Length: 277
Image (cartoon, rainbow, N blue to C red; front, side, top):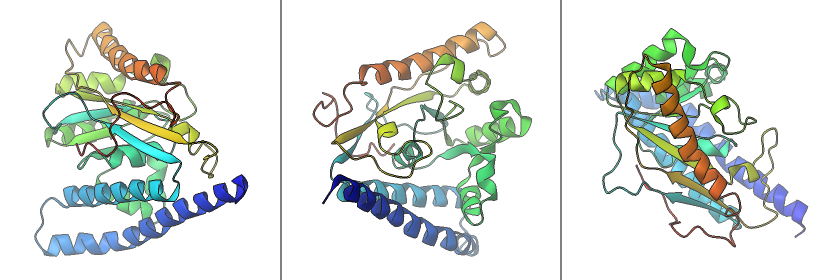
């Protein structure tokens, strides 16, 4: 089979599997919500988050069966305890695959996503049931409704997953990560879990649908040790210092693994599977 045919086959198989299973889930979501409510389940959002977590774990495992040259490796924090809420997971973003990977590793979390996704028929409804916090891409964490939703989830003891980079096309840097999010986290005094993702931009690039599987590829997801914010949230210097610390911790992994993403150069601490945080 030629390289072009393999790419087409893998792409159709991966997206077809995702579309079929995700489509069924979106149709089933309203029915599940009714069943949960009739059954007296109080935490319906948590139930949807757990279902989504299990679906993504299954889907990521299925991709590795279809695209045998592609491997996803998850590296949990080097701490003995499991990470529980309230906490904020902050990751770099370079591919649509990033969200699937992180959601397959965190069992219960609210996700921050762009507001336009809420208007997609059925899909937007499912995201709302999952508890997604919708933000305007242009304003990000500068609007009061986003701040209020963020605070509410953290005070309920939930985890929140966000990619504050602004756009997949922007490089991971201090300039592309705004300070507003970190001021809020300092006010709530909850830990930050940095998530460094390498290799995904080589799988499905922005604006493309084809899986680039020309050579063996290893995607690595590092869950770094939690960082507890310190300092005065009203101090621009303290907020900036926290932002820079997170950006640099993720950036150091991205830089170190720039040449370690191919299958032939495994990371010494890499262990296949999900940390199941």
